[in-house]
Amino acid sequence: MGARWRGQAPLNTLFWRDMLIVGTFINLLASFIALMIAAQGGDPIVAALVHFGCLPYNAFLVFALWQTPRCGTAMKWFSLAWLVAVTVL
Image (cartoon, rainbow, N blue to C red; front, side, top):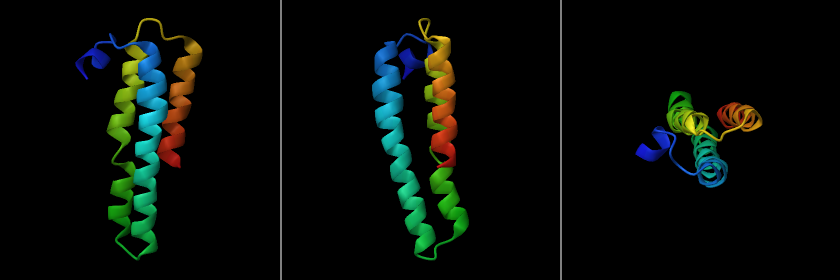
């Protein structure tokens, strides 16, 4: 995690593996669990906390990507679009 925070992680690993594959999977799993909580009549606050619980990790991934020296403008905009998409969906 330290290498990612300092912008020293390989760009392809950070973007493709960490953000798009692992990050998206974690967010889909959390959203599914939140939907199950809501569908079973659980507390909506708990469902919202489960759904938005990944937000700090997502923000960290986007920040780490932006800190990587070779990160281009298009990749930065895509990472922001990804952050919005996984937060809303």
